[in-house]
Image (tube, rainbow, N blue to C red; front, side, top):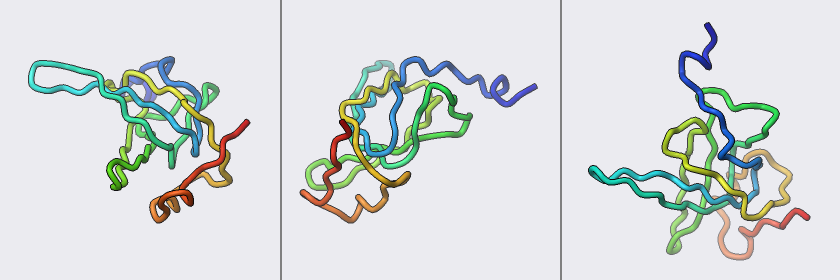
Length: 117
């Protein structure tokens, strides 16, 4: 028996291809009491990537960072979480690193990522 059948991995048709540096909108299902709603979280991917050719493993996740009211907010999102409605790529970034942790120390224009054409 393989690990995929034990964990119950779902297909990732609702997640577009992305890589670090891309700006993505992650629609997350939020449960408040007995009600559910969908909340969007938009920011730059600073680690993790998704390719159709390689399905992420059970524990794989990606990190999305955004600045809200001058405070940096990062969310670590598991690929196979049932709370992830969809991931849409808004803008493709041009970077030369796999992990963009250096963005944590930058603000303003220095924190910009060039767009990939």
